[in-house]
Length: 226
Image 1 (cartoon, rainbow, N blue to C red):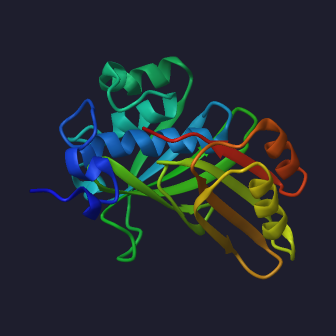
Image 2 (spheres, one colour; image 1 turned 90 degrees about the vertical axis):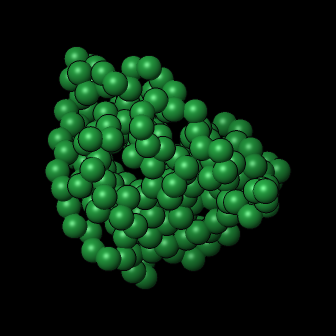
């Protein structure tokens, strides 16, 4: 008998509804594309995808390349269009390049690094791992360590590290009654670029987002990725 309380996610118990042979290589890869697109905010114009570990050795055969393209296009894991996602991306003017990378032993064997940019050359780098059953963990954004599951409404801020920013942000979150599920703050160095990821039980109002935009360089609020 399976004890649900011992699983971090329902996907780890029953797996996701999806197109493709492997939830790790297909459903999770779709979510990696989805979350990269959501973080970039505007449509992805160009992306370079590095496949690490088993993604590199078996990913193409399992449709990982098509799945990542589908996620970048905004498709969900059950979308029939996944099989033709690479062609659809090309038709929509999205440039996608795949290559194999060795990120080292510190990274999960099912990991991809997506370097994406929009038509205005705004860019970001997302490193994410497939943990099984279609679940993912975003482990880096722009080279900064982070922990992001994509299963919650999530606030991401990128800002200059200085005293008071995190306190101001959490005060705004509390003011609008958003309950925090998890939170992580990382900085490149003292006074350098910093990133904060806050997973919440529900999304923030436009008024709260407007206040956050006054204290951080970049603010993204993304819905759960199913």
